[in-house]
Structures are given as C-alpha cells and as structure tokens.
Image 1 (cartoon, rainbow, N blue to C red):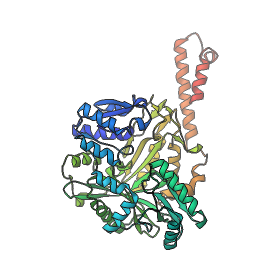
Image 2: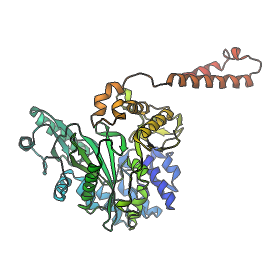
Image 3: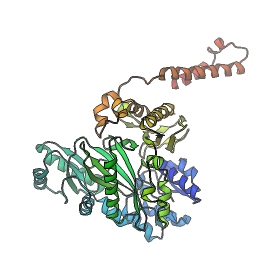
Image 4: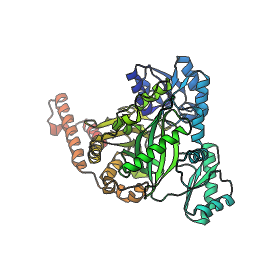
Length: 499
C-alpha cells in the first residue's frame, strides 16, 4: 500500500510493477479521479478531502491495509512519512513499514537531539545551542558566545516554519516569541534552538542507503540552493560548487551520520556549506526526498526498489565502490501557482496538457487533461528532470523541455523556471540560497520568451483554419467569408479568446 497521493504514489507504483508486486492506492474524496488511483492494482477510499481526515489518518490507513491484505506500507514523502508513531503502529499491526526504525525517526526528527547525536559522532554542526532555548536570558547568553546574526529554529520543524533570522540584538526577544508561537501552531511543540546564521550558504544534501546488515553507502550530493522561502524549486547533481575532495569528505560524513543512529533504508543528510567550503550538518530527512530522481538518473539506481529490498531483509544490491556519477541531471518542480501574482496557488481544471519528452527528459507527474487540481494539497504537480553528458547540455535540454511543456486552465511556474534557466549566474553555477531573492526583479520581468508571440499566432491561425473548414463542410452554401457572419461566429470568438 502506498500511503500517499500524487506523483510520488505513481512513482512508487511504477517500481512495484517492475518488481511484480501488486500495488494498492488510497484516496480522499477529491482524489477519486486521480492518476495514482487509476494506475494502482487496487484502490480504497479513506476519507474526506482535508488531509487530516484522510492521508494523515494513520489508523484508517492501517485498517485499510489489513482489510485488503497488504504486506507493507510505503509512506512516500510528506504526510506520515516521518511520523515515528505511525511507523510503530504499522509494525505492531504486523505490517512492514518501508522506512527506517521508529527510533531513528524520533532521534533525527528532533533537531536538538539530532545535533547532539551528530556532535557525538564527530560530524560537523553549525555552532549553536545543544539544549532548547526557553527565555531571553538563554538567548542573550548564546549570542554573547557565537555573535550575530543567528537563526532561531523550531526543534520539531521543517519547511521554514518556526524559523526566524535575527541580525539586531533589539529583535532577539520578539523573534524568539514569534518562532515559539509558530512552532507551537505548526507542530504542537514550541521548543526552539539557536544556530549561528551562515551567510551566503549552499544547501547540499547527500543521498544515503543502508541495509539491515551494516552496509551503508552514499549516492553523492544534490545541490538544492535554488529556494524560495526555504522551499526548493530546482535541484541538480553534481553540484557546480563542490570539489572532488569536499565531495569525498561530505560523503564520508553522511555515512557516519547514518551509522550513528543505526539507520536502514533511504535517507538524506542535509548540510550547509559556507563560501569557504566549510560544511555543517543541518538535518536528516528519514524518508525518500522529492528530488531523488536526479540521483537515480546519474547513478542508474532505483531508490524505491532498494527501499523495498531493504524492508524485505535483503542486502543492498551494490557496494560503495560500484557507485559512480554519470553526466549531469537537473530537476525543476512545476507547481500549479502563479509566480507573477505572489506565487498564489492555482487549483482548477486542466484543459490541455502537452508534456515534453525526447532524449534525456523524464517527467514524474500525476495530472492529465480533464483533471481538476484540488485545493487541499501541495501545489506541485510535476517534477521535470533533464540529463546531459555535461551541465551545459542538461541546462539546454531543460530549457527545451520547459518550452515544450504546455498546460492551460491553471497558472503554473513553468515560465518562472524557464527564466532561471536563462539567468547568467545560474548558467555559470554562481549561486547560493539567496539566488531568487537577489534576482527577483529580473525573474519577474514581463518580457515575453523568445518565439512565444509567433507560437501563439500559429496556434490561433491553425484553429481558425480548422473551424472554417468544418463550417464549409457543414454549410456548403456559404463561403468562408460569409460563414464568419453566421451563428457559429460567437463560438469561434469565444475559443479564440480562450486561446
């Protein structure tokens, strides 16, 4: 059973099908016509559209899994994927949880405990507190030791919530209160801690895999620094910033971090790397990452299949010395949102979709023509992946794929992503986590992309030709010119306006 929805559910089902494993989908009210429901071997309704009443209802999911005779549950990412209590309940019910041991989830899910564990294991961490911060005196004390700027973070947090950057001492107390309040409302826990703020950092993560026989490997890094409000938009591998020597050091640290908690399954060790290429442990994601396809593309390893094998008590199918990076891969997250209107979500009916293809292109998505994107979930609808022998070729292919990608009926981030691909700093690999903020005016410019006007004119001309030919057939006693004055003109005008 895949306890998830959307593109990740489709992605897991694909690997199951190749392995000869029957797949079971679950769905909410608004997902009755979703692609993962149609693609799975079986599908079961689990509740109303709000995620707390469906995809976050662990008891209902387990009940359904037992009812349909499933052996295992794959949580995907998000929802219950890093919920230790859900993992425990699966195991208690006799179900295999395709993920790590609940103890590892608990240890690495709490940011303070994770920091303490990494320090004990000898993995570099950002200077800061090792205990929770509760009052103004504790904040002033740590600032006196490490200096400003600092960042206050929710211990149980993620996705940029419960996080406040402080550059001035006068802002310390208000930032502490705001971080605690947001942490409580978002995670039910107001515990926060403090780290030294790393200026102009790169967000670099290492994919790890481990089995239950003590074998732990890394599958190299992913550069995840193209972010907006701590949410990743574009990832690539290899990183244009990391040197071979640093890659080896960070890979060894990632393996050491996983081994410190007796980890098994797929996971990701996230690091911050400063301008001088000093790296620090940030956090561990005890699940499959959204951006895992680019790692699969350059290594040739199916991460979902390895997850399933590990959960089935099989050893990894390869050793560290057998893993290599071949070429360069980039992933763009295509979302149903309007970047030119404050990134407002854009749910609605997809009237037309043409997905790109061709050499070096992969699309992991879940929408189709006639599908209505619901308002209840994350706006990401597709992960577009390009591969090339070089970084330049991967960028060129991504530009071509974004140009080919056509969706009407909803607003999408496609044009915004295309402008990033055209940016000189991005093309030269000169960027960090502040890239979007620093280039926002340029990325938001209204200049039309090359050829767009002519392409739109061609579409209109083709449609006009089609309509008039159809009118000739249906009304042979009218000329084309006369037919434009007949009763069908209204429909023609409406369709041209929509195009």
